[in-house]
Length: 156
Image 1 (cartoon, rainbow, N blue to C red):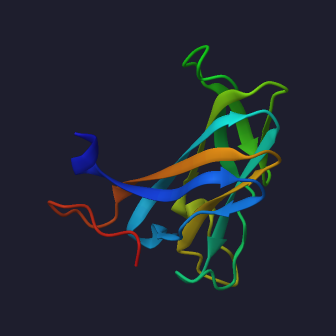
Image 2 (cartoon, rainbow, N blue to C red):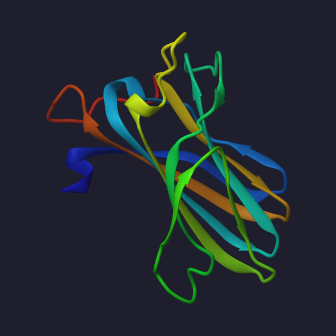
Image 3 (cartoon, rainbow, N blue to C red):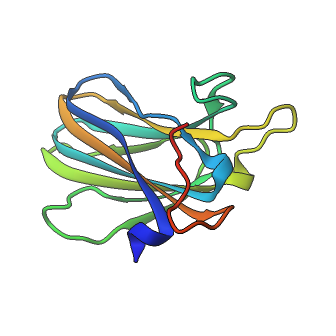
């Protein structure tokens, strides 16, 4: 069961995002894998999604993640196929000239966000939109470091 084997957290909910939407920080120090599922509803412009990492739950020492995997669908109304975008070097832009619902899936392992000078245990998604968009981001944290009957909290 997904809910028993992973931690599912709402990262961001915005009803009229027109610039930047910062998702909530989650503690990846308790999990090996992070997935952000980004839904963008009825925006005619472009949207850019990136992941950020930090050393604290308040965003201390935050910087962009430069090596994550991404998939996207530019028109979820027309189909459910995700297109592989490969390894991102910092941001993924989804652009269409028509008001389609869009989806992006971004994934990173906790070992891929560590730095040489700092321990980055916290991660979040950030969404930039050029047109008003209803946006939601859900996080799925998987492969818990410490097995429990209930997956460990990720928001502290």
